Image (cartoon, rainbow, N blue to C red; front, side, top):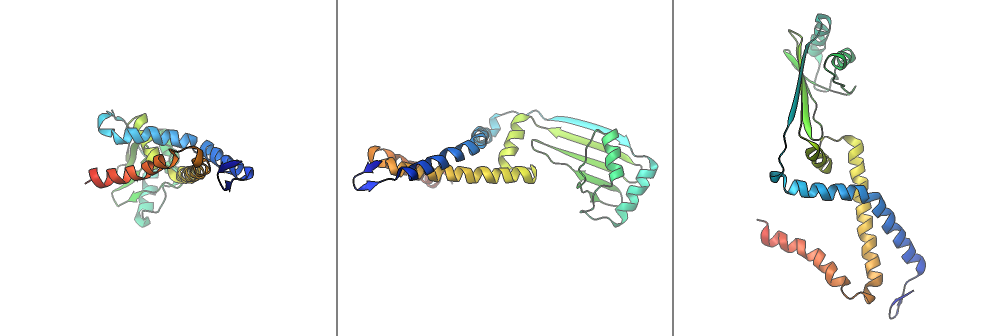
Length: 211
């Protein structure tokens, strides 16, 4: 395949680049669509109204569980998980599924469990004297949820690894595309002016309009 005078591209090279290009594009497709949409919503967050929905539930621990929890609090630190008996009780009485790894802020007066999530927040507070438990969950809608996915906020290790994979796939997509552009540049005179514009324009905007 002849691309420019004095420069010949092996078909195998172009085929390999094309494969890397479309495979990386396929892997990054869902992420690119998500990040493109949420990039707009994040950029115009002040124009998008969110109506938080708050759910509050209350219940009282049995005295036996309250005493057991108070005993744990005497020697607990902020890495101490919530006991399994309390997690089971919360599931049955507050419709709250606490992870086995859920930790709490322990004090002599109360146990406080912070439960942040994408697009919202939640917490559980248990009074160690009366056993009174209060659970509150706030959600801010689908757009807030997707925005937090974009930022990787409170999404956990698996989603963060997924973001890393998407980032690498986008990098492969961009670099393989740039190489393919180079191979075809001789027959496409606007290739390098447009590429240069794509590189220079963000720098100019940052220097001239961001203060």
